[in-house]
Each structure stands twice: as C-alpha cells, then as structure tokens.
Length: 347
Image (cartoon, rainbow, N blue to C red; front, side, top):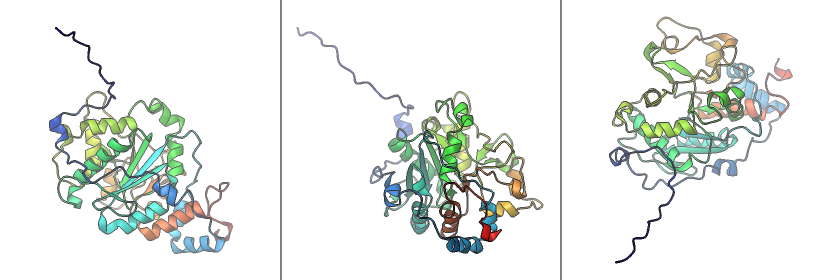
C-alpha cells in the first residue's frame, strides 16, 4: 500500500465571501480588461501650464458668479504622506466628450483616474451590466462599476471617489482632507470603513441618510470591501432597476452585518460643506423657496458665503465649458503660494 502524502495547500487571500448564486447575479466583465489607472497622468501629467493674468481675467469675466464662489476656496497641496486616491467617473457613449474633458483637466491631479462607460473609447473602458444603458437603470450600472473597481484596483489605492461625468473634484483638497487627523482617527488609519460625501435625508427622513451621488462620494478600501460583500444580499436589492443609486449604496452599507456604516459628517468645524451637489455659483446665491426639495433633504443648510468650506472638494452639474473655467480659476491662475482669492486686477 502506498503512503498517503499530506496535500499542500496554497495560502488564500482574505476577501469578503460570496456564494456562487450571489456571484451569478452580476454579468461577467468579458471584454472589460484592467484599464491603466495612470493613463491620465501619463498623457496630462499634473497641473496644466499657468495662464497669463489677461487669460485669467477672461475666465473670471466669463463666469463671474462662479468665480466669486471659488474665491472662498483655498487650494491646498496634499501632504506627501496623504492616502492614495483613485478618481472614477461613469458616463455613456454620448457623453464621452465631457468625460474626456475631465480626464484632461482635474482627473490627472488624482493618483489614478478611470472613466467607465458602455462603450470603449480612448481612455474610457466599457463595463457590461445587467439591463439597458439607461438613467432608470443606474443602480445596475453602479453595481457593475464598483465590482470592476473592487476586482482590479482595491489593493492599488487607499480611497476611491465616484461620481458622474458632470462632477468636478479638487483632488489636492480631497487628499488633504483624507489625510487629516480627523479622518485617520475615524478610520483607525484605514482599518475601519468610512463613507464620505454630502449628506442628504432621503425624502426628509433623518433615519435614511445617504451621500449625494451628484456631488460624488468617497469610500476607503475597507468600505469598498464591505460594499462588494453586500451587493447581492437581499437588503441590497440586487435585481432592482432604478436611478437612485446613491440611496442604494447608503442602504447597502447601513444594513451590512455588524456595526452599520453611516454617511459621515464631512462639514468643516464651522459647519460649512465640503461636497456640493450644484455648481459653485448656485451655492453662493441660493436662497430657499417654499416646498424646496433641497431644504427638505439637507441637514443644517447654510447660505451665502457660509455655504461652502474653504476646503471644498467637489461640485456637480459642471458641463465641459465650465470645467475649463473652474480648472483655470482653481489651478492655472494660482501659484503654489497663492491658494485662493480674487486677483488684484479684479478686486
């Protein structure tokens, strides 16, 4: 009789467990290979060249209200030990020109950048998802996009900011915030999941807080792991067809086993918001009107110059022409020693 040799086992990486039934709820990626997350930095490395005072003045005059709102913002360089950040936007084929403007302006200032769509294009990768490519089906698109992020990039970056092709991010301010003692403490240096963004009350319900998808929301690696592990659980409604993907992400994290992960309060010490669901000038000039959904959904809303933190990190509804203006006013018309404020010629 032959001696029975003990079988050698290979060490396994610890990852959230998913059953075969759960995995089958999401379509395979097929022709969605791992895109180079550093491509934007290679093709448009860092901040674009500074503009002349005349060019900067033209940008200010083109969008005067937005320019005044941006005067409230101080663009701070991220510290060398700041956590790494992957910036992700989702789009579809008709909006590829908008996505490419983002890839050429603010996204190269992230450590990594991805544009995810329904069709492949230069710098843009197609991610298949269940159901049609439609606004009413963004939840399925979001599930597939986060699965793609998890399976290809979770170990490459510490934090992930996710939003649409009309989101505008100030990456250095976001990285500085993520590296702050506040966030390091909250996450126990990245070991605890955190869910950051602009908090809203779903239909005014304080028990259903979610982060606005338009303003973009941020997950650390631990939160991405948790979200991925819950995607096909009944509490995460894996077969739902709907446009309220931001509400669903919050629900998945809040109803996960163990300690619920709620949307964290990202306001600065003066109660001013860092993440913004509208364009800069809209927040500066906004005043409430009767039956306004924004008031109903918001938490301790502030107005005027108190609307926005000097450490603001994101805006929404930013079309390509406005992206160019914001990028110029925040990055190309300021030096490393000049974090903010209007130029002398415009005061």
